[in-house]
Image (cartoon, rainbow, N blue to C red; front, side):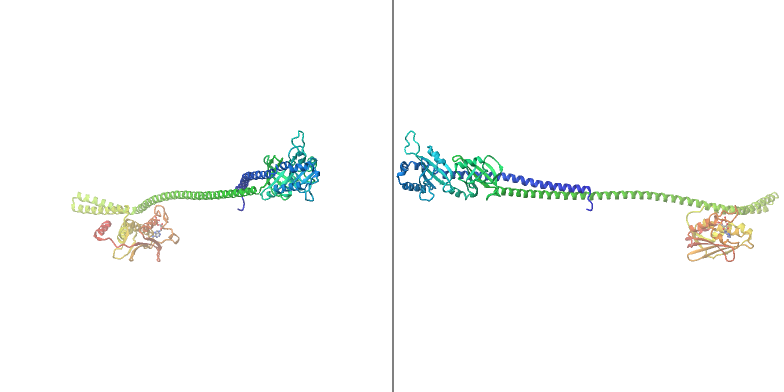
Length: 640
Ligand code: ADP
């Protein structure tokens, strides 16, 4: 990681701590096991040492005690006593030989006889240059004890041989029965100890024997012989020199060091120098009270150390295995936890994404619903607006129609007033003729009245028809009929203005698909406008034309009036565009006409004719005409 956060630092610290703990645990486990193994190995080593020591001590005691009785036995020999009675006068050779024979039989080093002054009289080594004969051993303990009447024992270095030996002595009595008898000589037997040491050499242990001063007197290791277990004090040295036990031997310290004191008899030791240095030993001590000695056994600690190491290594290995297992388990646990955490995170992310999606969908749905509602509202509103627009337009159409009616009113007035005046006149005439009893003449006048009222009824019917509201259904409409109808409405004005009407249409009825009322209204508008434009024209002419193509029908209303100024051409279809004075024009006619023709699927166009005047053209889809007689009859009756 490029930068470590505090969490990872803490994790690293924890890992370090765990490692430390693990290692400390390992060390503790190994150490503890080593301690236990060491204790056990020491215990068994001590057991072995104890056994070996007991055996060795018994061996040594046996080896020495074997000779215990021998000096006394020799002291009681007649030959010895005889020689001791008069040593100067006798040949010592037979006794010397006897002693030598005994020496060989008993397998001891030397046997010799001292007189009461400790001079050696006879000896088994009489033939050797360093024979004891002639030597005085007054200073030896074995002499002093024996001359006192007891059997004596001593160990020390031989004065002549320098060899370590063990001495047994017994007093020799010439006459034991005397009341104040004192010993007349001393019989001494010397045993060499090297043989015992030689037997120790095969043992897997070092054996030592120390005297009460701690001087190592016997040792399986030659270098340790005649050394002091612990350095000797000056007083001890003086006393030892006086006893001449060890002659002039320097008795240096053995170099033994105590490592651990386990109990009275058990210690762990090592040597500072010498051949035994560099290795620790278990030291076990056993007193040999019969000799006033102590016997020691030194067992090398190698097996203990080995056991210690082996156990420690085993324990370490076991610990390592357990730790490895634990580590693997922990790792797997951690991996599983990591995986679970990952899966959980994934799940959460997915859940979040899903929630978000759902939220988005909900929002979007809400938006959509809102938009939908708004759209529905708008559609509804538009529908209502269209409805009201349609209604308004219908009303407008009607209003425009009424406006045309208004314009027509003057003419209609004229049309109605004229017959009214005529009827009045005819009625007055009829009354006069009746008063004169001229029934025939009166009847003729009444006949005129009937004719006139019929004509007035026709005019009224025409007006009613124009003012009626249109239906919604389209039917086949004859264009010629529509023209005829419109012209009839303007009959009076046409007549009045002396307007020439030019009809340019084919014989065959031109059928269009339309609402007859509306189409009539359009034609009335166009003709009305043309008549207004022709009001001042010198020789006014109205041209009405119909042309058919297979698809369409072209209807044309043209006049030879002043025409439409070019800049008005584009605007005349706008609602409320008018050039006429208030009262004579609303400016709605063309815009409504245009709309009506649009609704019928056609086109209304205006332009100025080449020869002057305005020309309006209606193009409508052609219709095949009504099917059957019934429809035609209805059509005709409709326009009757
Ligand atoms: P209005 O007749 O009430 O003015 P219209 O929409 O019918 O309304 O006509 C709009 C205008 O078009 C008229 O004011 C007139 O200027 C012009 N116009 C219509 N027909 C003709 C025509 N035949 N000749 C000249 N001008 C015309």
